[in-house]
Image (cartoon, rainbow, N blue to C red; front, side, top):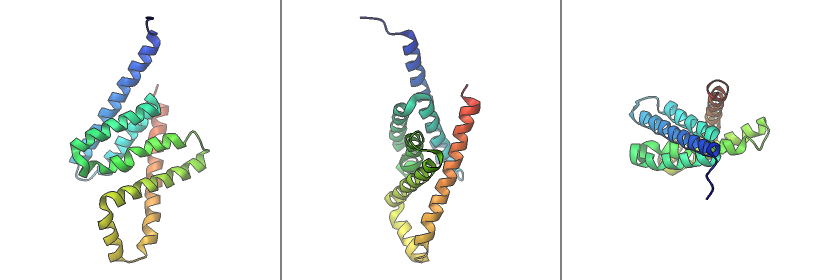
Length: 176
């Protein structure tokens, strides 16, 4: 049996190590979100950015493995009640972004990303807090049926912008 190429082994070892580091950083951000009284969304965004780094460093397949591993561990700690935003929105979003960006021009890609992020966010809301959300809308009035989706898309667009800036900063300054 022929010996494996040392250069290939080195690249594979580096990718595995970076995937493990990204998974550890994601879990650290999720733990911080669980313990923090106010900065939950900031720590979830940090976890999402760590997954985006995994896409850059290990490729899409490696990033999906990091997401799967961190999703399973996050069910144990901090638990489903605290990790559902990561499981449904903040985790899959950078992976969906990695699928969309190479295939489309920048403006259509941004539109598709925001719409897919809106679908992810809506599915998470309906899945985990659906009854409370529907009761809130019925209690406040029917005008919320028009305002809340637009506000949600605006929040997703702002999140997409922030994640894009973090990714650009990582590519220009940190990845050397």
